[in-house]
Length: 361
Image 1 (tube, rainbow, N blue to C red):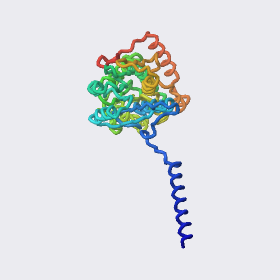
Image 2: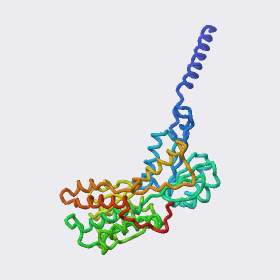
Image 3: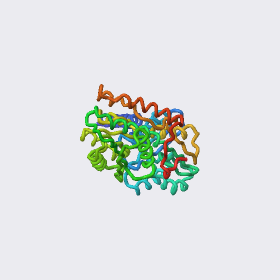
């Protein structure tokens, strides 16, 4: 019995030792972004970046473009990224304060609607760096980025005005009427419209332009309703400037067998054959560049970066998706004319008007 007891005690001792060694060598990896953001391979602490949205991801537009730029920074610089989404203004403010309070190195506010929030709270966190995309707020720890959306919209308006005369294209009527649907009634969207109107009238001074605001960036059904109403008033092509609401604009084009113009990202293939072109606004580049400036130590507060057509901040897509859909009915003179107008805007031969209520610098 004594021998058996001794053998059993030895066996238990060995098993305890093995279990202890095993627990030290096979700890499970934590998959959360915050918990896995220790030191990188070079031994330096990872940069912590928070993106705060005034809406939701999945809009295939403004927010998704910012996300794409941030993910490129994750891949290139190994940063830790946190993203907060909400459509409620009260939550936008609390999200910004929360990220600054948690000590994120850079808090990026992805919308002009954060201007007043940053003006109020950035001074409370002098050691935190902030960035505002699509608006301007002054502050020693704020970098702002704006775009020449009026220049990009000038090209979009010109394209729409030409397209509405192409009656060889299915369901394009003889009426010289085009449409425009925006999200919130805010200065930056008026800047879009000013350029769109000027570009359309550059082609045809007598063209009629329908304008509607949904009052939100997060209601596709409202966007669809407004677009269908414009089609019923004679428009056969409508520009979407409405983020998540704009998905309804594009859906209306498909449902009514009409046409639309996309915005912010390349939306041409959302409904192939119904999106003539998209006015690309490089929110992805703006987001990436401000993160890069912090990584490389070149971040400088109280400055504004202006991304115009010459800097590649805005442009139209090449219409290749529509060209493939229409075949020999595709009006090749439109992209040719747009290329000509783009060069004139770049050179300054064409001066595109801007909305006075939208600050840039």
